[in-house]
Amino acid sequence: MISSDTVQKAAINAKGLHLSLGGKTLLSDFDISIASGELTALLGPNGAGKSTLLKVLCGEVDAGGDIEFFGKPRAEFKPEHLAKHLGVLPQHSNLTFAFTAQEVVELGSIPLQIPNAVTQQIAKEKMQIVDVLSLRERLYPTLSGGEKQRVHFARVLTQLSHAGEQCVLMLDEPTSALDLAHQHRTLEVARELARLGAAVIVVIHDLNLAAQYADRLVIINEGKIQADGSPWQALTSETINRVYGWPVHITAHPTDDYPVVISSGIPTVYSEAT
Image (cartoon, rainbow, N blue to C red; front, side):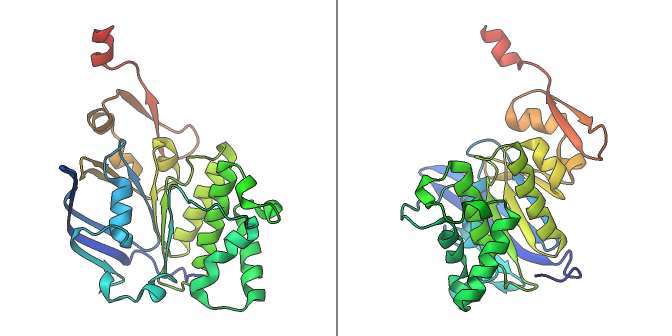
């Protein structure tokens, strides 16, 4: 899909983002650059601004500041063109029609304007990748939450199947409803797309999954970046305690080179209350 030499080029540049709703600041003078060929994980407590940032970057929510995609202002892209290069998997998809799972995946081909036979073949390939091909004849409303999540992931992969060298994939909590094996499979697929040159952004709560699969971790709280770097750089006990209000111990994975976050007890505020 994407050539391997499209690596470390800025796919997204955002400067001076600011957004307030209901008297709460969601983003404050926020700058971020997202590179092609890299999986970036957005971390932070509930309400920190992670999902809001994705919505602002893709244009779902208007905010102040400047956003560029592939060196051009996002506003200069026609929606039908950007849809071929930007895929977004939201936290929730409110689809209630009695489509089969494969028909839902095939919806991803709408921006591509390709023959039905090609659409069906691509959809089956993407369903195989995310392990939902066996569900292709099932009616979508009968699927479990995790199965629906994986079907929509296949839909977004279908949408990006013709993205070429300009590809951005945004995943908002893609593992929230998944079992252990499918959490890892989903992130493996996301990481492989980054290795092929895509710019991949994942909002995720599991610090250990983020450390295992992401090249870069951006920890956000109160609309500002609190840490930004490799897993070893961003995941320090001091940062996690300050941002999440919970004491942790950081250790090395016994066989692989990434940090493991272990809860180290009950924070003082709770122990005093008891």
